Amino acid sequence: MNFASDNVMGASRPVLEALVAANDGPMPAYGADPLTARVEAAFCGLFEREVAVSLVATGTGANALALSALVPPYGLAVCHAEAHIIDDECGAPEFFMHGAKLAGLPGVGAKLAPDTVAAYLDGLSRSVKQMPPRALSISQVTECGLVYTPDEIRALADVAHARGLAVHMDGARFANALVALGCRPAEITWKAGVDVLTFGATKNGCLAAEAVIFFDPAQAESMPWRRKRSGHTLSKGRLLSAQLDAYLADSHWLANARHANAMAACLSQGLCERPGVRLAWATQANEVFAILPRSLDEALRAAGAVYHPWTPSSLPPDERVAEDEVLVRLVTSFATSPEMIDRLLAVAHGRRVAAE
Ligand SMILES: Cc1ncc(COP(=O)(O)O)c(C=O)c1O
Image (cartoon, rainbow, N blue to C red; front, side, top):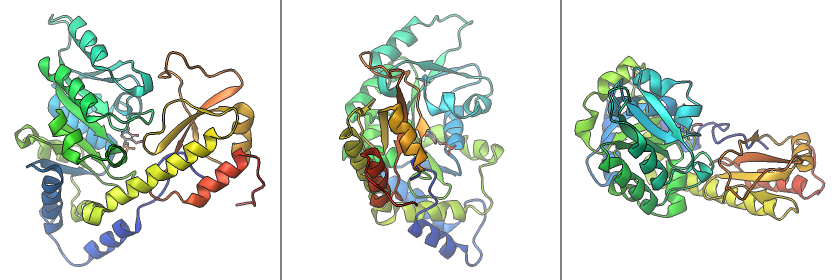
């Protein structure tokens, strides 16, 4: 019953099989192989326009490289105070931006509101003492499991663009957001004003593969060198491409995300049927944030359930976690089985379960 994250599971079967298939025989190195060309073309088709694609092995690498191309060393990138880029990447974005800073703003459910961003940006001095803001980064899905709608993204992008900032989207869970919204990839990216996307794939079925997507290829001019300098240019580049090739083929990535979201919906509903349990934020994608009685938390953990406690800092103003309660995050993935959910819910509802 491991719900700690969507990366506690390995890679999906088609991705692993594609890696084995791509392993045979020689192919040009450093991304000059036909598989990489196919993946680049697939991304152009997916986003319905020409895009520049840089494949890397980690989400942190993708975010840091994307931001480094948007923000000069003396600049500022604005994000939510709980964003992965500011809280969970050990300073990688600042490191790759060569001194630029991240500014974290508040927002319920780790979502930024246009007014908050506008007020912050308009309150900055234009003095040489102030680092000029150059990028806004939003997470899709947010760190509290919420999904930005196309209109919400557009409103934020308008605020950013009007003030000269580019818009980056950390799409570590892009697929989960996309299927939750039921729209096309273009609608929640460049058509809504996103300039650069970190297209996450590792959490949703790849072994280790993410793509930095620039919707204006001219803005990606420096990316080959940035990627090489950061150690993300794999000499056997086909092994990154093979993963994404299989991931995108036959809508495999969408099926994986649909499954993960459906599992989260079952888990969320089942937990909420247990008296004393309520959601901290709505379950919109593949993460359940629940406020549990401490006694239930202890029973679940004693039965072998694994998940993380979560910070209450982005709760709605009328919500609080009492002394005898705990706020937790449970994440489902492409590989979460209905049996795992049934088992956890059985424990939650006090039903007898056999040992694992
Ligand atoms: C919102 C978000 N962004 C990015 C990442 C990518 O991180 P990693 O460098 O571990 O692949 C994660 C992974 O936990 C995440 O949750």
